[in-house]
Amino acid sequence: MLVTQLADLDDTDRDVRADTWRSRRMVLAKDGVGFSFHDTVIYAGTTSTFHYQHHVEGVYCVQGEGTLTNEETGEVHDVRDGTMYLLDGHEKHTVRAASDLRMVCVFNPPVTGREVHDENGVYPLVVEPSTSR
Ligand code: 9YT
Image (cartoon, rainbow, N blue to C red; front, side):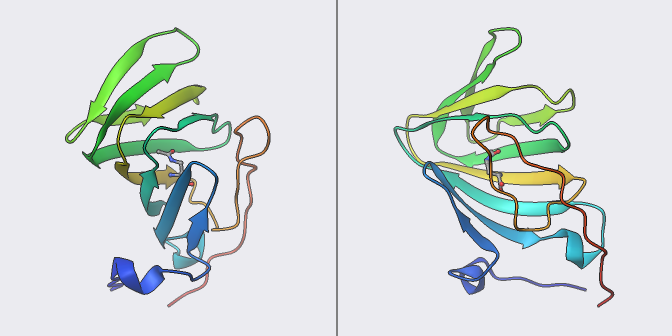
């Protein structure tokens, strides 16, 4: 069993910061369960474009307000407490945060913790062996 307290991840290697968001990655590839699990805040007033070409991501918004644009169809969706979206088609997408958006994110395959977006908003596929706990 793994029990994690969010605040204990502050300023560790599981606390990943980018210009428009911060993500505390509670479960990573090395935890060996086939997915990663993140608590992410997308900062108020920012626009972020993401394109996970190698990962499926599920996102559940638990706080804040914003929009999600599917860049492949142009569709725009409201995002607020209770909104969930699943990027099961590797869709390029843009998140606009009207207020801080608190997002619970799950990735498959799991991220290792080192990935950052490249200039296209793409995460590389980084594979590392899992370790047993
Ligand atoms: C909602 C979203 O995709 N945020 C970007 C950060 C991502 N959740 C991560 O790498 O932890």
